[in-house]
Amino acid sequence: MIPPFDGNEALALSNEAGWNQTVRDWERLLELTPEGCFGKRVEGQLVSTATALVYGERLAWIGMVLTTEAQRGKGFARELLGKALAYCDGRGVRCVKLDATDLGRPVYAKLGFVEERPVSRWVRVAGAFAGASGEVSHAVDFELDREAFGVDRSALLRSLEGEEVYAVSGRGYAMSRPGRLGRFFGPCVARDEETARRLLGAFLARHTGESTAWDFCDENEGAARMAREAGYAPVRRLMRMYRGDAAGAGVASGPMIYGLAGFEFG
Image 1: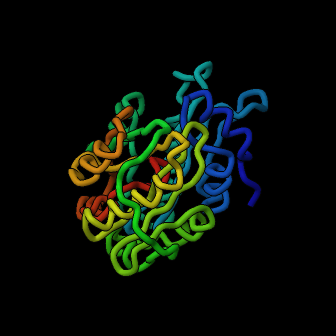
Image 2: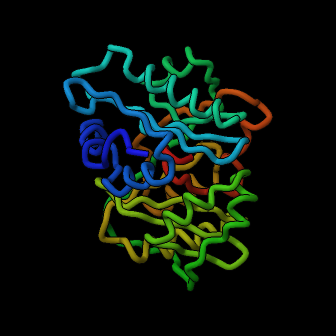
């Protein structure tokens, strides 16, 4: 299948919106879900996008819903969302989720999405880190991730593991990747706060000279506590919303999830 756009075209949209994605982030989506990436062109120029990443029959994730400012108000986002949702329906997905900006929430509500829980982005500026950073390994725990996330997202994790991995055997793992505005910390999955703190410490010990970004559900008090202690501050708040099977809505939001893979991935 020929992708509807390439990473560089799409990057212009996310850059205009002030988002943290890189070309590689867009390329990853196009590789993982080429048939779930949708784009709208006006006079040959890409002006709007939406993506749908399917995690089996229980869950799919909508992301990268963007329209260039000059073309907003023309229904392009709604059109592409309709295509993304039709794609999910065609795959038999029972629950579709997304992390919505304030601008997008009314649009999603009209399409049947229900608010679930707030999620936030926290940012730490470059600077010394005084916390502990014990020894870690570098292997993704796929079984633990499935237990925590509720569905199999191993294809995404295998795509991400070529970046950076920090792990404590049997207890948790975390990943990191470059961002346009700051190094991204996540996903982070841990059985307890002590393990999550160890993973964060290992990450920050390596990246004290960079700004870093970290996304997590607001209800994870341990993550918020760790973030404040490490010098992070909240800069952006979104609303997690879902459509479909309410019983499946609890997936992707368990207590062991100390860091999201990103608003576009869950």
